[in-house]
Length: 103
Image 1 (cartoon, helix red, strand yellow):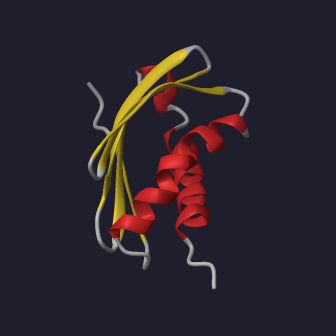
Image 2 (image 1 turned 135 degrees about the vertical axis):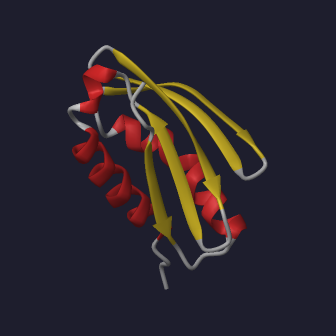
């Protein structure tokens, strides 16, 4: 089984504000990508477990919100492994947009 895709996104928002922004973010992000469908999004404290579907393939993972960064871990099926670099860049970009402090 391939290693999970692990992404760390730094932020300066603090844990509570980062979690608040992310709680609304996954569904919004999926709505802007017609090929991505959110099957599950379950929050428990500062951890979210999710399952998404893209190109007919299911991927699962979790998000851990920390004081100064967010850690995303996604297990991609073998078919989606070909798109791992693209997925990593998309997750980092979307995460930075959600977690950028607006003054």
